[in-house]
Length: 224
Image 1: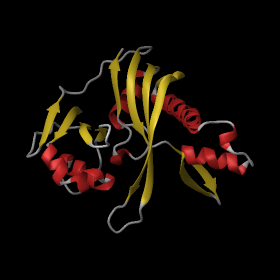
Image 2: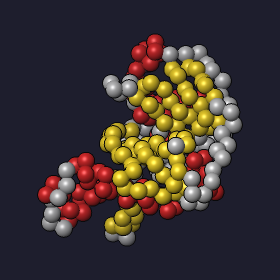
Image 3: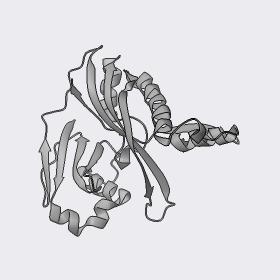
Image 4: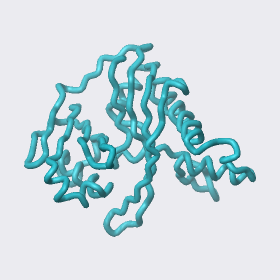
């Protein structure tokens, strides 16, 4: 795997702003950069970094092959991505995720965003979450629980007060000829501890959570 930093020409961003501002169009653009044939399954992860005005600064792209710079798109490529990890090691991390929870309704499993689900559970019990939490407190409360569960699955652990959770964003994704759906993301940032190196390395390569084809799931790490 190779970690790329993708820089797009400012003129191209301005000229094609509808493409780069739309989640599905950007998804197609990224897919076109890394795909080698029409039937290829997704084998890459990416994360878009935005400025204060929600304009694209650059894109981190983890892909199995090195990608060369193209017209209006420049790639800075790391050496082969082979992180050397040790159990018990602490790392600084960044993760943009689409945190969901599955619940059974009428015998069928349905997916819900964790924040909307938490609000629904309060309402279901005849309570108003605002009587107990500010919205940012609710987001951190349910977000950290989700991240702890993912850590149990992927070989790392986190502590509640060592993780910042923000940028609660909602996007509408509309594939051509298909029903639109809503994608809600959270940004997690802080310190983690490696518990199982093999599970954790697999998570770095394969991503965490859902909506990986839409810029979620890539965990970026560095030593503290």
